[in-house]
Image (tube, rainbow over all chains, first blue to last red; front, top):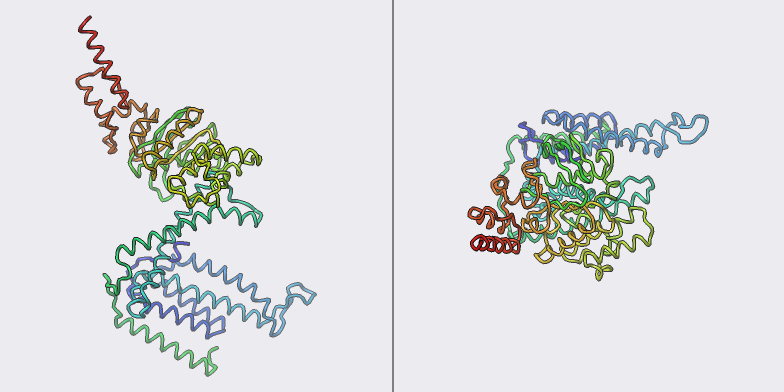
Length: 262
Length: 279
């Protein structure tokens, strides 16, 4: 799980791109995926993400995330296929009856839904794998003018995930030492067996947040505009790629409206 | 009670923590485990209730091989007090918190109730049974955690820095409680950085240095090996240091660990001298 959102340092031009360029890429992919409803075009979009990951040298690390997405999209597809009843009926799930019809529209539509889901979700691990979160936040604050407090909240919540996982391990050990059993088949019991773990985690988290707030205020948090150690430039290549991508979007929207690409 | 044979432990990423550890702890012993931070004290303790299992070698607790058991099963035999009580407190009242452990042991309601009241009175928290443990002081929360182990009546008590966050008075109170448990027949193993507490309470000291046992002997012995202790930046309590100095002139001075003992020893030596003169 932790590998999915981790920065993977490599020395490629994709890593050196401005975080905003990569964010634009992510947003554009999302836009395009809503523009198209042809599963083949959507699959090509997904492959383009894999190609970017390959060029950034992180495809191997991305594969588990992609695999997980594929399973998720598969489940999504299975549900979806029964809810689209328009179009020509191809067959019924239970032969000889009229229960659960599968239509050509259904297959087509649910494939598109699954592929769209994958396109939307797959760009994020690639974005986070090639971009340091702190750079992303600095750019969001400096260029997009997001208030630093909100940007800080975002960066801190990411930063604390491993801390809380460690904390969780301690809590599990403490409760097991008191004879607490986690494995339970009964769903309601399972829920209650999580209470001894969830409550201490919640309480220690709140305490930690309080301490963090105090320690930050003592160091002058919120005094006004900040200066940053690292300056990130929006270079010519960033302009080039960003404008190129925007041009492609404009073209696709135009073609889409003309009815050439659906 | 606890048999550690050739215990070696490394984390899955290959970092070795414990190397070739051997010792036996007999029933009813009162053992202090000392050493610098990061030498593996807590890692070693976690082997005593199967929270960790040996990479090689074996750990036997009350005749049970920890590799063939689980922490839950061993909870009946081993009580483990963690450094931070906030990792375990989750019930809305002290009473419920203390009764959580025995509740896991499939005891009757009356038995759980009786044990809870007993444990609460042992840690002097009887008046706080209906309070929410979160609003108690750090020292009191530590005692709640301690009581929640006592109520399970384990034969072996493993205490990871039981006196941290306590003032001197509270620390002594906790150790006096532990001492009482020891009189009642419990086996005690505790980790601390307070050498005064070690001198005052422990019968035996195991010194850990970089994942290996540096010294393992009676408390009186260990504190009279200052050169060895120095290797891991430990210093004997001041009274032992003073006695060590006095020993250069009076080699027959006994290894003492308290002011009272040293005083008695000095009187004894004076008397012996007087006897020799007159005789």
